[in-house]
Amino acid sequence: MKAFTFYVLAAWAVCQAFAQSQGRQLHLAFTGDIMMGTTFPSVQLPPQEGRQLFVDAAPLLQRADVAAGNLEGTLCDSGTTHKKPSAMCYAFRTPTRFAPLLQQAGFDFLSMANNHANDFGAAGIGSTRSCLDRMGIAYAGLLQAPDRVVVERDGVRYGFCAFGHNGYTLRHQDLDTVRQIITSLVAESDVVIVSFHGGAEGSKQNRLPWGKEMFCGEDRGSLRQFAHFCIDAGADVVYGHGPHVVRAVELYKEHFIAYSLGNFCTPYGMNLSGLLGYAPLLELTLHEDGRFAEGQIHSFIQHRGVGPRMDEQHRAAREIRRLTRLDVPHTPLVIDDKGRILRKGH
Image 1: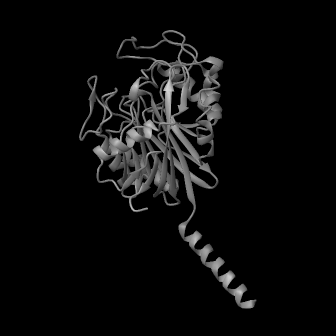
Image 2: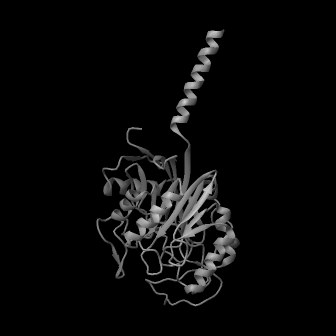
Image 3: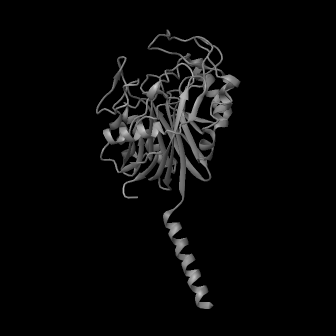
């Protein structure tokens, strides 16, 4: 009996040592663009005050240690815009009473570094910041907003920063500033997460090009270079949005890059046909030091006025897998039919 007890205790000790060697794992969730409805130029708001927008996604966002997305537009109730709405120019004004939906869904951080944050000028930016402050949702990305923020959950400090391509945003083309912000976050945080808004827009922009992307005369960034630069500077995860379609993912030096998560919750004001309606929610599991462990692409599909709904056909995941094989063929990632992401050989 004593010998048996000894072997049991020895086996338990080995198991404990192995578990400790693996370290704690961290669970993160990411989405693309969020614009819950607008009152400009006409009222286009979801039914039931939007209470059903995130009904399918909330359980996934809430179970993550931290969840992040891109707030595409403003949270304000009035004001004028400098934009003239047209086929190529939109202005988004979501009522402030919709702000609690973001908190209830489970978002901890939202990027403001995009081409719609300034749709209603300084007043719109101020109203948006006030709404997010009241909801306890962190944000970054504008010249007048914090250039970085640290969110602490369960003793882990998650450092966030965000970059865009507009003059009022922290620009991803300004690599000296990018490096400075990431370096500061490395010193302040356990895990560093970079959000970027970039790339040309539209259903034909799902391929990830080499070099600079131009759209409507704007420099929308050299996104491969930028993402790699961020990892080299110390970032652990880099996730993008902006083209309104999904793009490839990559594992670079053991760290995860999502080049575009597309639209996520944009029930009005945007074309949702075909690829534009694919709305992935990316879950990542990281080792405690920020290295990629595994991931899951949850495929959602959007319909006008409804918000993201689970897609049993897994179309977003299949499209990301296809694009990854085409555009980053040497990345050591495998994505299965249902969106699970593993390192090759695991």
